[in-house]
Image (tube, rainbow, N blue to C red; front, side):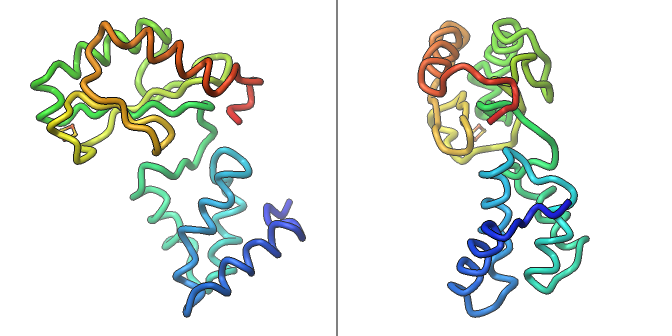
Length: 168
Ligand code: FES
């Protein structure tokens, strides 16, 4: 089944028209798909390749390279905790442990209600605020010590609302 329905295709073509080369629209098109589905389904990879005149392998490499793209369903809130050196020195390992306890999941897993996905990531370029937690590739929580975790989770539930189980 085509991911790019007639409406989505129109949107895609208007995005492509903003760039001098079709290939330059790859990232915005991947965002478009992810916004709609919560992740990038396999079928969309081939369609984006065709739309931008590139190869399947090229699109797959982009999705794999950028942590913000997902090739599988993720929770409504994607929690990316940096566990690189500066954050680790400031106790990111303890923060990670607390996140696992509060959410009841391990790294790479999603809560059964589809609300949270927990991931470990490399440096987020905010080492002076370590340990840091990035939510949905947009909101950066700073100096996230274990005692802040429960409040952050409660705030996120309040802000994003309970999940309907689909991760969207
Ligand atoms: S090491 Fe965590 S933000 Fe740089």
